[in-house]
Image (cartoon, rainbow, N blue to C red; front, side):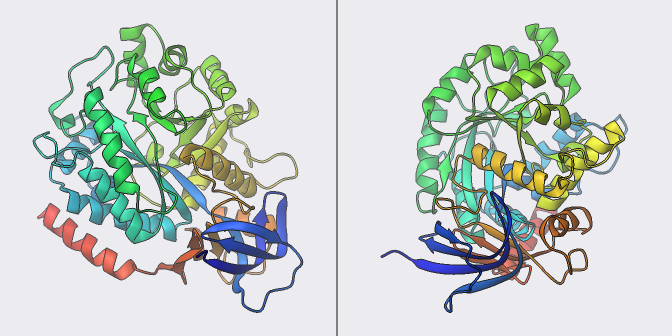
Length: 455
C-alpha cells in the first residue's frame, strides 16, 4: 500500500524560483505533485521558514572522518597531500567493518545536519588488514550501506577499482594493499555491493576507477561498460605532482589523457580536476561531465583552486562533496567555492549573473550537478523527484526577517554553519530542531570506536 503524505512549505525554492505557500503531495517518498495555491491542507505537515531541495554530497570517504584533525602536525619534511596520505594509510590499517560502520554513520549524521541529503560514497577500503578478502568481498561496502540505513541518507555506493601505485602500472605501495582488486575480483565486488544496498530505498551502485594513477588505460572503457546506465567517478589532476608524473610517464596531462582514452559524457564525475589547461577545462565542459569539487578538503590538503568561473562560463557542470570529511557542511563547501574564486580573481559574487544571487546560483548548480553525479532523481522540488528537503531555521540570526535569495545568501555567507532546522529524506524526517533523530546513539558508538582506535 502506498504511503501518502502532504507537506506544506511556507516558502520554497522551486526550479522557477522562490514561492510562498507550496504544498507537496508525496507518495512512497517521491513528490507526486506540487501545488502553489497558498492554502495549507488541514492534515499537512507544516515546514515554516525557507525550504530548499536537499543538496547531494557527490564525493566522500566516510572512514576519514575518524582521522580528522590527526594530520595537522607538521613533520620534519615539507608537508603536502603526499605526507597526509601516509597518515591516512596508518589510520585505515586499524579499521574493521564495524569500525567503518560506526564512523560512516557519524559522518552521515553530520552531513544530514549540515544540509546534505544524499551521498555518493567513493569507497576504496575493501579488504582485511593483511590485504586478503573478507568472506564477503563487499563487507566494507556493506558497512557503508548499513550506516546509510541507520542515518537515513540517500546513497550511491561507488566501489572503487584500484590496481596500481602510479602511472605506467607501477606496483602499489604497502599502504594500498587493502584497496587492490583485479578485474575479476572487481566484478564480484560490484555484485556483492548490489546485494548490500538492496534493502535501502532508491540506492544505486555506480563504478569508480580510482584515478589514472591507479588503473590501466584500457581499464577505463572496460569499467564504463560494466554498468552502462550508472555513474562513473574518477579522481583526476588533484595535485601538480600528479600532473607532472602523467606528463613524464605518458606524455599527456591527466584530463587530456582521460578524454583521449575513453568516451567521457554526462555519466562521468571528475573529482577535483584542479589543475587543468584551458583546453582541458573547455573540453571537459563540452563533455557534459560533472566537476566534483570538494573545496574544504582541497584547501586543507593544499591542492589548489579549481577554475570554476571560466568552467561555468564554458557550460561546465559542478557539484560539491565533503571528501576527507575534515569539516562537514553544505554551506561551508559552497561558501569556500565562491571565496576561492574571489581570492584568485580579487572580485566578488563571481558565481552569480548580473543582478542575481550567488547563494542561489551555487545551491541550484550544486543540486543539479550532484543529482547527475549520484544518478538519482534528487536535488529539485518537482514532481518525480525524491522528497529530499532542507528547511532553514527562520529565527536564526543570519536569516531572521529575510526571505528568498536574501535568506539563502545569508544562510550560506553569514552563518558559521548552515542554519538547518528540519531535514526530510524520501519523505521521512531525519533531522528535527537541527539535530538528527538518532544522534545520541550514533555519537556514543562513534566515540567508543575512536577511543579504542586511538588507544
